[in-house]
Amino acid sequence: MESHLPLKVLLAAPRSFCAGVTRAIQIVEACLERYGAPIYVRHAIVHNEHVLREMEAKGVIFVEELSEVPDGVPVVFSAHGVPPSVVNAAKERELPTIDATCPLVARVHQEAVRHHKAGCQVLVIGKKNHPEIIGLLGHLPTKDCQVIDDIEAARNIQIPIHQPVAYVTQTTLSVEDTGQIVEVLRKRFPKLIEPRKETICYATTNRQQATRTIASGAEALLVLGSPTSSNSTRLTEVARQVGCQRVRLVPEPDELNLAWLDDVNVLGLTAGASAPEYLVQRLLDRLALRRTLVIEEVPVTEEKIQFRLPLERFPKIPQMPVSRPSIKSQHSQAGFHRSKSIALSQELHLA
Ligand code: SF4
Image (cartoon, rainbow, N blue to C red; front, side):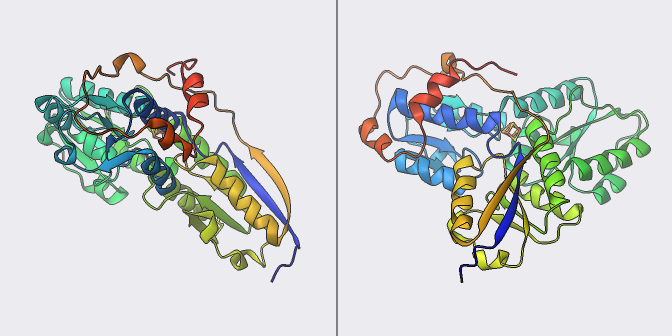
């Protein structure tokens, strides 16, 4: 039943797309523009079902293995990064490739390789099966790296005697949980070599801080994002850690049962780094059908980081071997504002 009672909404800021996700999406859009559909993408370009479905409508085909990509067709590597074995396999098949790995993920790869070259055992703090960790591990010999996925693993890890120890992290981990793991490692290995720059990325850190801030004053909290999204899932955990126990991850605003919020007076709302901002607006529109909204945006910091598109690294493809639907008709179904985003991207700077 529609009550139209007031509902205060604390809106986290920053929220939604980070610079790496924006860049990855723009890379695929630029590929569609340059090469025409279909474009193949190895793995979900970003972990958001909504984004993927919109891209599929434009002619993007997502695959898990290069063997699913026909010869001669461009393939984009997702924002999570790939192991060198995948790059090499693509080279062997002479597949035109475009790398949408987030520059901050690539920086972690470089950091890990640098430690390995210095003779360190590299401890990789992260989730074993996450594509970012799979991509990172591919840059290191198995004997010289170990994954630490929780505090217990940090307590029990064994390192060859006299070998120096360094660590890096997945970019989308909980800042607090990772801090506890690092504390254990520092105690166990007093000469532990730290990353030169923080390897949990700025977007993860900021979204967690913003969520923590709104969650402490909210009776319930919604995180827009997919269950496959590491950073979105971490936001639900952060909210619970500060005492907000009524927390939901919402992949699709239309699927939320609004009755769940009938006895709530103050709601926190945020979106993971791979969830489009228009989902936030769509959810607010739905809430407004049932409640009188009083929206308060709560900014904790301003984000200015933007990444340039690597247009100069897009391969030249003389002749495409497959039939290519008109890009115009593909884009007529599009939810993204392609021309605007590409124009913008040419002004961007690598952070
Ligand atoms: S969450 Fe961080 S590492 Fe991941 S794509 Fe965004 S900016 Fe890059």
